[in-house]
Length: 162
Image: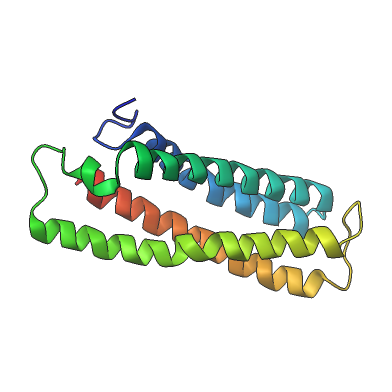
């Protein structure tokens, strides 16, 4: 599919990832609400695992689509009418660099949070000695994915919509 479904020059997979970024943050905070307020530890674990798997698949497919099928984001942007100016492209690259700081760190924080929780929490999950570290890693991961989402949406807007 040459173009996505959100009405611009972005690819189909880029539109999928943008939709995932919009959905992931509320789902993440719903999961945090379930564990903190409702004490639904199993629900929290299952939602987090599902979010991690969905994001891994979506971002993996997106990277394959973007790098192999489309030869990078700039090749998609360069097809747009009217084309971006050289100054616009440099501004877009700056936004992308900020986004990549968060986008690259997110999977590492999230993987560490999930792997340590999987190994250190009992099954079914309940509070334990690992809870304090898990809470810290969880909040770092939640903030990081939130910043990944916000900066990703800003990049999408400046590269493909403005």
